[in-house]
Length: 196
Image (cartoon, rainbow, N blue to C red):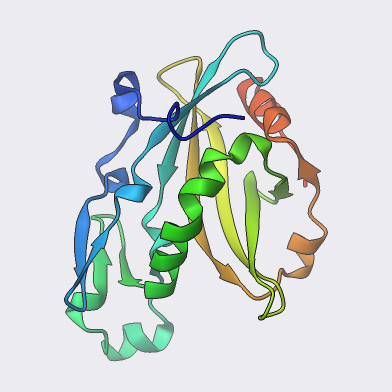
């Protein structure tokens, strides 16, 4: 199993990180949120192709923010200090998502090679951690996709699209086919799709 120490960012992959994937500290209700746990890192891994692939892990702001509700957007009742704008979209800072991301997200992604992965429609995937036996086994769900990089042949981009607590899975998520991470990465590298 890979460890935290050998999953540091490799400077050779700096070109894969766009500005909206770079995180620092932000202010929320007079509290400083340190988002450094969402900085990109690289997993070097051979999924069975005979050589290591560089998998650049990128995190979306959806890991610590939520969409504006229709009512919030219509009435404009959001405090400006609660807004997060990454230059591509405006969202609401969400304390629960932030706290859960700090507690679970680095561990889940650093152990992704050994985790169960569920196949969802449209090339999306899900892995999760059960964290609350008191609340009907509430789960911390991590939704992501994996694509080949257009610029480097042996590089893939794993984008964490969103991550948040779920009280229960919907029917599609419950019935989702499971796949090993190595199978997923090999299929993406070889341009083969994995059907849900």
